[in-house]
Every structure is written in C-alpha cells, then in structure tokens.
Image 1 (tube, rainbow, N blue to C red):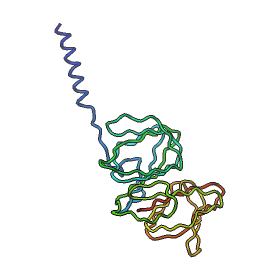
Image 2: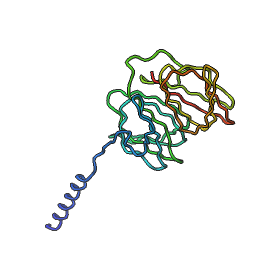
Image 3: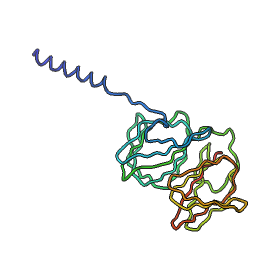
Image 4: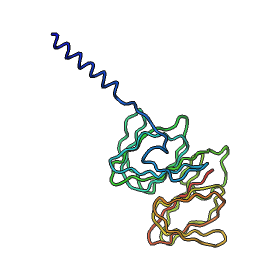
Length: 226
C-alpha cells in the first residue's frame, strides 16, 4: 500500500510540475514579429512585408490600428486569435485586398501558412485616424476604413487607368511584376519596371494615369489616407 501511495503521490506532483512549467501565451507588437519585415514607417503608416514559409506560423502579435492588406501569393492559411481555437484552412489569393477597422481592443492573433509555397502579403497599419475624412474620392473605392480608401487597378497589356487625383498622401503597391507607366496632368510620363510587392509613398497632391506597358496583365493598388 505504501508503494502504491508513493507512486500516486509522485504522479500527482509530476502533474503539478507540468502545469507550472507550461508557458503562458504572450504576444509581441506587430513590428517585432519575425515574419513581419518593416519596410516603411513614418507618422502616417507602418508597412510590413509579411513572409511566412510553408508549414510555419507567426508568433502571436498585436495590431492596434486600422489596417489594409494586399496579398501577393496563393496559399491556404489559418488564423487564430489568442485564447481561441484555430480557424479552418482558408484560401488567400494573390491580388486580394482587405481593409479592417480597429474597434475597441487591439487584435492579437497569429497566422499559419499551410502552403503551398511562401505566404506573402503587404500589411499596412494607419497610425493616425483623421478627425474628419476627406470627401475627395480619386476613383472607384475597392475597400475602405475610417483611415484610408483603397483603389484597385487591374490593367490589361497596353491599358490605362482613368486620370485621377490624389488629394491626400497615398501608398502605391504593385501586386504583379509589370512595366508601369505613370503620366501626369502635364503629359509628362515616367516608366518603372516593378516587381510584386514594390511600393512607393507619395506625400504630395498628384494627378496621373497608370498604364501597363508590359505583355501580361498587371495589378496596382493605391491606399490613400482619408
């Protein structure tokens, strides 16, 4: 009887030790998460290029502001908020755009890439929400939140966007490789060979058209502050 009692007591202590040693879930700010590579930060935006190899997951990380995301690859992913069950696998498709509004508490979650191939997305956090949104809309709005409007240009070879004006600072992102031609209101043009994920921040008023000078369909996304 004594031996059995001691064995049970040791097992009970082992169970207590395991419980005590289980690490608590913790989160890091998004800019400190290793898969989120900060490529631009100023007073208005925090831009990260997220790259997750297949089979890997991010750490739990926290988003505190309104956001927009532009997907660059085709993958299956799962999402998991801290303290909740992991989601079912869902597709993330190249060219998809999302805009979310931060309400109340910050969002703390992690993302797992189920493959195939690396998962890549440009994630933009808007660090200042305007007290009053601008009424000036540059083009058809593809997505928006209280901080920004998103314009999506899918251009066939040789096609051009309508001429449009950005009254507020904006971020232009290439979703696909393409020969991008930009023509201002004065008729002057510039050509840029861009890759998927390339971006440029513009903090002045601009009137222009965007044209695809390449042989394949191209996609450009503009995120304009409100």
